[in-house]
Amino acid sequence: MSPKGLGWIIVDSLDTMMLMNLTEPLADARNLTWNQDQDINTFETTICMMGGLLSAHYLSTQLPHIASKRDSVYLAKAVDLADRLLVAYDFSSGISYASVNIGKREGIVSHADGGASSTAEAATVQLPTGVKGPLSPKMDHLVCFLPGTIAMAVSSRDPFLAHLSDVMRQATEGRTLAEALRDPNWTIHHEGDVKLAIEIMDTCWGMCAVTDTSLAPEITWFNASNADLQSQPGDRWLRTQGSALSKWKEDYTIKPLDAHNLQRPETVESVFMMYRITGNSIYREWGWKILQSFQKHTIVPDGEGYTSLNDVRTAPPEARDNMESFWLAETHKYLYLLFSPTDCMPLTEVVFNTEAHSFPRFTPKGSLKTGW
Image (cartoon, rainbow, N blue to C red):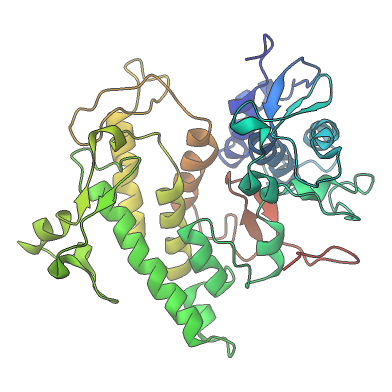
């Protein structure tokens, strides 16, 4: 940790604060500097810090209560950080260094795995050549720091699906399901994507509903050996009442070392996307139950923060005294948007990167290509 601190949680949650109009903490978050002798992970810094700054810049020009086309502080910070991250690509292989010293502007090989770089991480932040950045005309490289969003913004055929929400969103291209069904290009393949998304969402909710805290564990194992417990397409186990309710619970096994909860966002992200696209109020109900469970079990005694949990199987659970940045950057944001008007961050106009940072959808021009 840098003596001055890099403001990781602050930057990661900038756009969340903007959406909630939290002006006072936003004012405190503007004083950032990268002039520090600090090693940082290339991938994590890109999706969290770079994504947070670029999203904050975008929202600062869009939201009525904070919009200012003259305020470029977030873009300036993003440009400075991007310059420092570019040294991760200063060699011929094209695979980025795992880390960078942002003060010395030096690429650093991984401290583990014999210096190897993760191909998944490197592919997420791959630098396109000859790209003209739409946010800053002087920064040809800036647009590459929108991990996971360029392909989603221009194509519904991107095969790299990291979340359930991507399946549903790409099937409808961000439109409501009712609108997508009227499209003459709607096919049986889109229909299959929607059915798959609904069924997986049921399974994700089951991971919450099966515990005493109504919060999902980090890992869940499935008991699929018994044919009676193997669901068929179209089955809706979680909507069933009565004695069958206990039957579907037998599908899940939670092992002691997997029972912790880090306040991860993927379930509430999917609930948000499913509600926006289908309009089915059940997803708001599930989101409300998850929010109530977080409020009940993860808020710290003095009420000034939240913590992850050691074991969600029993209530009250033991606290971990730890809060990840994605709790504010993602989980809070998606819960807030779930209960916001549907014209707030419409999915036909906005895409979210893997850290829930929002960017405008755009049509590529000139030499900008997705590569797929």
